[in-house]
Amino acid sequence: MSENSGFSEENLRKIASQKVSFRVSVKLHIAIFIVVNTLLFLVNYFFTPGFYWIIFPFFSWLIGVNMHIVGYLLYARGVYPMAKRGVIYHAVSFFSVMLFLFIINFTTYPEYYWVLFPLIFWGAAVILHILVYIQYFSGKVEKSGKYSTKKELAIEKELEKMRKKQEKRNKIQQ
Image 1 (cartoon, rainbow, N blue to C red):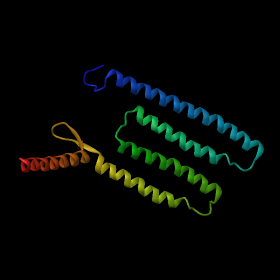
Image 2: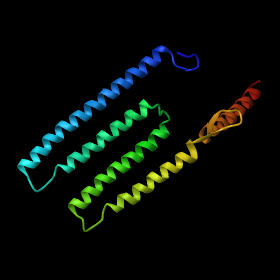
Image 3: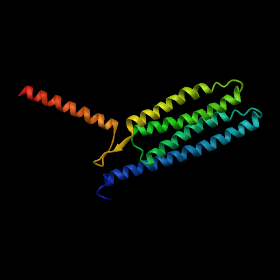
Image 4: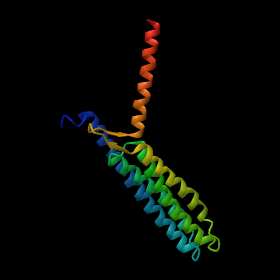
């Protein structure tokens, strides 16, 4: 282990253990998804042919599996800033759910495109979330070589104000 890694052997072991647990959990979720949906498909095919209701539980559960995989990948790849995770979760859930809603719209009521309402309004929220992330949480490398975000700069500014107030209080008390 290098001295600059910032992680002790114990911390690395905890991270490795968590990654293994998450990976097993995802694999188990996928296996159960496949088994249950295969059984549901067979029930649908043999007992209610002509109406393919299987698409509803299949795609609903697929969204859950998808989010489980995304959560594992974000952890395994070391995406720790919560703001970045939030943007990724929001975008992935938007695309997953919108796909499902399009399927529901076109299989149940194709004459009316009600799916455009969540597409437009939720899509606007996703775009806003991405813009806020870019504006507030993405950063740049300063001349000193340090990477900082607007949030970190605002925190430093606020700390400086707090220090000045503390200095004034200390002078008054003396």
